[in-house]
Amino acid sequence: MAEMIQDQLLQARGDMSGQLELMWEMIKAPLIVPLLKLGVVFCLTMSLMLFCERLYMGVVIILVKLFWKKPEKRYNWEPLPDAIDDIEMGGSNKFPHVLIQIPMFNEREVYKVSIGAACNLSWPADRMVIQVLDDSTDPVIKDMVELECQRWASKGLNIVYQIRETRGGYKAGALKEGLKRDYVKHCEYVAIFDADFRPEPDYLRRAIPFLMYNPKIALVQARWRFVNADECLMTRMQEMSLDYHFTVEQEVGSSTHAFFGFNGTAGVWRIAAIDEAGGWKDRTTVEDMDLAVRASLRGWKFVYLGDLQVKSELPSTFKAFRFQQHRWSCGPANLFRKMVMEIVRNKNVNFWKKLYVIYSFFIVRKITAHMVTFLFYCIILPLTVLIPEVEVPIWGSVYIPSIITILNSVGTPRSIHLLFYWILFENVMSLHRTKATLIGLLEAGRANEWVVTEKLGDSQKNKVNAKDKPVSVKAAVKKARSKILDRMNFLELGVGVFLFLVGCYDFMYGKWSYYIYFFLQSITFFIVGFGYVGTII
Figure (cartoon, rainbow, N blue to C red):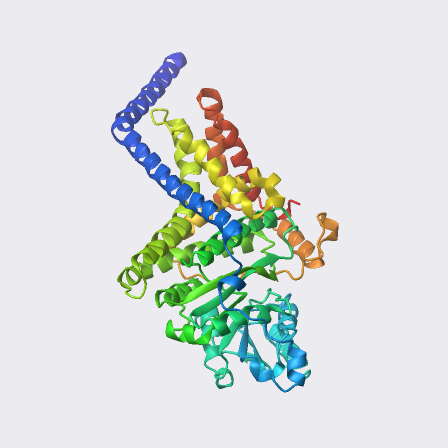
C-alpha cells in the first residue's frame, strides 16, 4: 500500500514537472525569446552610443593635448599685480569685489579647514566678503561654526555667519538667500566652495582674470583633487571615475565651446550671469547643473581650468557614497525631464549646441551610461545564458566594453592596475545609478531626496594600512562592523546570488565561458552586500 502511494506521488510530481516544462516551452518561443532579443538589441544600441561618445571624447582630448593652446592663451587673460604691493600703493580698487560662499550642514569635522582656506585666499580684504551659509540643525555645531567665523573676523577678515529659519531649497535655497543680502550687492563675482573644499591661496588670482577680461564668460570651473584617495579601495575607485570626468569630459566641453556642467563647488560665477539665467532653483537635486544649462542657453560661456586644482574629500563610507551617487544620477535625469522641451524651444543657441546638450550630455552621459552597464551585464547577458536561443555577439559583450574601459582609464594612469576591479565595482554601483536614473525620469518618490554627503575630516595624512587611519575613520569602521544588519545591503546580495547561480549553470551547461565573469562579479556584489567595500585597503 505504501509503495503504491509513493508511486502515485512520484507520478504526480512527474506530471507537475512535465506540465511546468510544457508551459515554459509554450511561452518561451513566442514571448520570452522575442523580448530577450529586443533587450539585447536595446542594450547593444546603448553600448554603441556610449562607445561612439567615448571614442569622440578620446579623439578630441588627444587633439586638445597636442594642438590646443592653454586657456590663458585662448582667452584674454592678464595676471593681477601682487595683492600686498597693490594695497600698499592704495590701488586695491584694481581688484573686483568677490563674494565667497561656503554652504554647510552639520559639518563638525571639516568646517575649520574650509573656512580657514577661504580666509587665506590671496585677495585684498576690503574686496572680499566671505559668507558662511550654515543650515546646521545641531546647535552645538552651529555655535562652533559661528565662533570660528568670529575668530577670523577678529583678524580683520570680512566674514559673515549667515543662518536661515528653515532649510527650504537645501543648498540652492541657501545660495539664493545669500545673494539677496544687502552687504553683497556690490560684489561682481561669487566663488562657491563646499565645506570639505580647500582652495589654494592663489585660486582667485588665477580664476578671476578670465571673468574680468572676457565679458561673455559666466563660469570658471576648477578641478577637484582628493586628499583621501588612498584611504581604501573604494576611494581609489571613486578617484578613477571622477578623474575621467575632469580630465576628459570637462576638458573637451570647455575646449570645444560646446557645454560642460558646473560641478557645484570650486567654481567662480559672474553674478550677472546667475541673475540673467533666473538664479538658483531647487526643482531638482542638481541645482548646479540646472543653473549651468540655463546660463548656457542664454549664450554664456564656461571655462574649465584643469591645472587649477582644489583639494576635497571623497566619501569614506559606502552608505555616504551610495547616497551621493543616488543624487548625482537621479538629479540629471529629473532635470532632463523638466528641461528637454525648454532646450528644444530655445532660440538663443544654434541647433548643434542644443543637440550636444540633449544627446551627448544628457542622454548618453547622464542616462545611457548609468543604465546600460547594469541592464546589459547584470540582467540581459545572464538571461541569455539561461535561454541559449538568444545570443549576444562577441563584439557587443567583449570588444566594445573593453575599448570603453581602456578609454575610461586615461584619467588615472596610476590606478591602471586596478582597472579590472574598477569595472566590477562600477557594475555594482550601476545598480543604484540605474534605479536612481529611473526615479528621476519618472519623478518617483525619492526624486528630490537630498542627503548631505558625510565627511570624516582631513584624511590627507592617511596611510595605506588601517593603523594609520585617523581616529574618526577607525571609529566609523568599528561602528559599522558592530551593526551587522545596518552594514548589509540586501539588494546587492540578491543580485550577487542571481549571478552566482547563473555562473554555476553556465559552468555546467554553457558554451561561452561567461561563468568566469559571473563568479567574479557575484563576489564583488557580495563584498558590497556584506558591507566590506569601504574597509578594503
